[in-house]
Amino acid sequence: MKKLTVTGKFGLGKGLIAALAGFVVVGGAVWALNQQKSEDPQALACSSSMNTAKNLKGLTTGEVAAFLPAEKPLNLSQLKFNDADGNFITMADLKGTKLLNLWATWCAPCRKEMPHLDKLQREAGSEEFNVIAVNMDRGENNPKPLKFLSDIGVKDLAYFSDHTMDTFNNLRTKGKAPGLPSTIMIGEDGCEIGTMFGPADWAAPEAFALVNAALAGQKKVQ
Image (cartoon, rainbow, N blue to C red; front, side, top):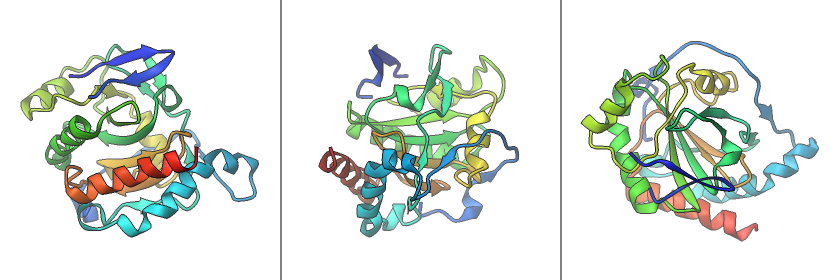
């Protein structure tokens, strides 16, 4: 498994179409994320991701047809979970554009989706983009997630976890994670670009096109 490298901020090295029935629904709720309002000055902080989201609407086809570009992006910069060494990090600690994916070993659709995310990371991962796959299995130092990833041949994803499931519950309260897997694309500004409920083939050509367009959109507004 890949690990984080620290360079001032945390950074990573190189390394649906889905019916709602295709993912696992889980209960729980806590914490409030900051829902952006057009009249709220904080919405300005998400203007980059909002503009990028607008440019992605024509690219939600095929495997990513269920991708929902954000109209009122959430600021997710303070979303918190653990890295491979057990250290707490926030989304703000991670560079570039991120594809946040929430998964668990008991989530059957996740087993099929994870190798696709692994391929996306392998072929598109850079300082500008990384897949941030956060495991939701309960239990501190639980050995099951790493064994699960090894068993299905995942090698290029860095390992992140939240054994409390707070990350999932936090997002669920805002309608961004009704079940597992759930995936959110997050811009360099730490704000939501778009969301996918359920699994997808993230190694499909249309998924790569979506990611590349998002990266191009982020550069355009810099």
